[in-house]
Length: 236
Ligand code: SF4
Image 1: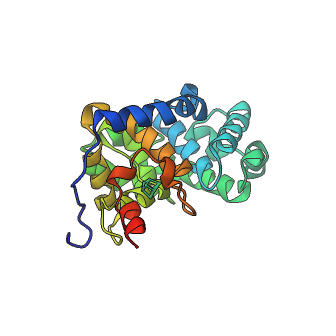
Image 2: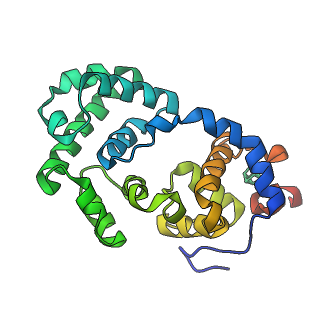
């Protein structure tokens, strides 16, 4: 039994499993998140992450399109924008009251703390950068890691959301009470580094569509042979 919070690395993806992941989820990945919304500008990345909270990818992109059609997506511009106009611009994405308020708050903080320049924070050593990013209002581990991918890519940093947490714990790669860092470490260790960026996207689609919170579709899961949840279910 692993210590509380530690990850358990006992499994690995062989080429057969990797090919199944690619075949099943690869085509979906190409359609779900168009390339033009993977920003190299960390501030744009921050804003689209705020817009992605508790909504579908399609709604998130719709809201971002609405926002960028009306405003330059910079901290300087959004700080001076009227909150009601931001609400109007992102309305189609859902939770627009909360998100407009958060966009205003985070823009103000980025401007005041970092003179509007997140790149200077990302130039710091990784752990220092993360600590500073998490000083921004409403920015936790996941969003800070999303921003870190701007410098380090998904090969070096995988932001952990509820879908990743669920699948990692079900597979038995981390203890049920494992914290964010332990889940992240477990996932990073499962995915071979040279293919980690791509595989993390495919794993996320698997978690979202197949390893669903309710009624996971284990019967069609490419990872079934590695999964503790499935094994226990069959034994019970
Ligand atoms: S076998 Fe079932 S529980 Fe395990 S990862 Fe696949 S869908 Fe999730």
